[in-house]
Image (cartoon, rainbow, N blue to C red):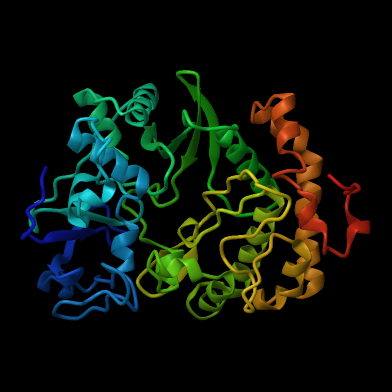
Length: 425
């Protein structure tokens, strides 16, 4: 499919409780940005909800994006770097040496990515006929296809279709969509460029996060064609059918990609206070995710790695879905998003405790959360590493580097309550 530069893109949506999509409106080019206009039929529906507020209120006429090139809730449903790479690979027949993802426009990426995208939106050339772009593939097929994209090799038609099905999933690493019986899954693959077991490390962190009481997506570690694969069960697909609307942390904060450089947890906590269901419990959960990220070395915690369900009126935090221990260049580290209102973002627990009031927590409550997480990681470390199939050398490489790095404890005042000593590296 090739998009017509002058043609609009029609936005379809699954309304809450519905198992079939309806057309909500259209995107039109307006210079460097894209406007969105609700359809009359959508506005006349008693069940119609705004695709997101304050970006796209239910009103007639075109609406320009508040920031960026297109409304954030639309951008959230567009393919990210891996998906764009897959589409560019398809367009060029694998000859991507001189190609760049910016060679194709947003409308092309929206219309050529798979329809089973995150959240409740999809994009079509028609306002009357919904034609989903979906092709199934086995896990082995998808791993093989991802390897060929990374190697710059042209894909056979069947593998090309199967991989493009998952091109709407965000993120930079190789991944695809998969169905297993009644389950809908995101499959994240190890890469030929990995210098450490990233996929097994993410499984380890996600498993320990669940044991520590965080709300996380269900994960499973499998192998295909001798490659590690992390299967993540999707939480935006209700068992009864249909789709759940979601928006990213960027959209919640009213930021575009460039503005995301200034995103902060403190600002997110304030939005949670005013716009989320269960604000106190959600702020506690957010604080727990921050400290757990620090404890497992995940400092790739940018705003797109946070999301919330949208029901047309209120937001509800989704389960955590991307907790990945990252390599460290040195002993010190910072989180991507500022933790305090003062811009403080160092990957240290004591500073988190000092700023606990931002999350409507006392210092004692913050210590309780952190100490429980430390104890959980320490107590379950060996069993969790066994589940992650980590070798002795791999678990030793993770321990005290990504997981429980001593830098995190330099300013933490309740060491006596910890289950073991933290000496120098």
